[in-house]
Image 1 (cartoon, rainbow, N blue to C red):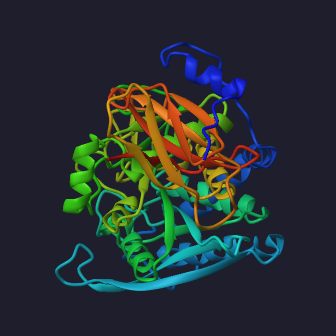
Image 2: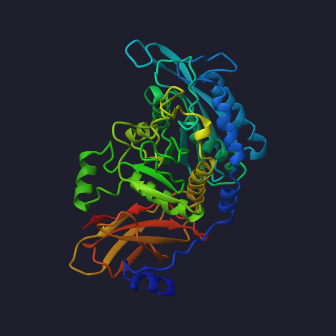
Length: 453
């Protein structure tokens, strides 16, 4: 096999130092750009307003009242997403996934039945069983997690995430995409991540080829309590470093390669950053190299525990006067998670980051397999070999990704049309990975190059 390094593009890429400033080329797929531009703030505001209208969506609230409680919210979401089926040409299906949870020794104090609403947009490529999951929770709470009666609007936590998923359902269901996308409207989050735990266990039991899980929890507040910091141009993505499910063999490989910053979740987070910033103007995706905030967790956590690449998207400024508070005013400060505090332009942009990521990943080939960095021999060139993906469409080419060892993000892409590359970079000074890419430029997730003799 020959090494492709002869094109002018590749020559320029491999001869420019990594630290040299250069122009950033934004090559946008028209279909993805049109979908992102089609996100409706009006629709998203209406969804949050409707959720707030259920008064209290506590997991212990009514399951039978048609106008109030968590049961009414579940039925509303089911009907809302089902209304997009006629436009989907048979791609979209919606179901309620029921599960029992709780008991005397739990935070719920008794056993109850809850429902997750799952919208599945079936991929068109029968040879490709990959699945992408996007999550948000529709349950809410106020200052007391056992209070199932008093007002608990949950406009931002997590009405904002639900509004994101609802628009994604409307827009993606109209599009022919090769692989399957599951949008999960989850219950049980506020009492212990129960809905996500049920779905993660189901995904593991049924052996879903789940390549990416993106949890959206609180993506609509742009103003911080206490500091009054305000921005709607930055979204955080949290990702774990060392996988919860790491085995001794995985640990050995990680330590040998100094790959503490290159878990599957970290590769997904970097992908969200690159793709989101490509398609959403005036937006920065800030990678937070933690699994979540201190002392807290979200619906991505159960998926991480099952070994899936899962990340959390969350606003950069949290307002603790609003989260899990009773509605009131004290000393001129308004408390409570009400709709007036939602920045819907921020929700729109964060939805765009999600939508662009999911569509670009769904349209891309699968990841290259068995990516190996050859460590034997003393040389200032690096030799990397890999195999073509065994499912889905065949890649048109590959990108070799390079970054210096003290850098958090990939710094350079080199186009290669073979399944090996020899490049003038010392293997000791850089990290490497490989992506598959199709003719239109849709990239797969990055597959880290692990050292092999």
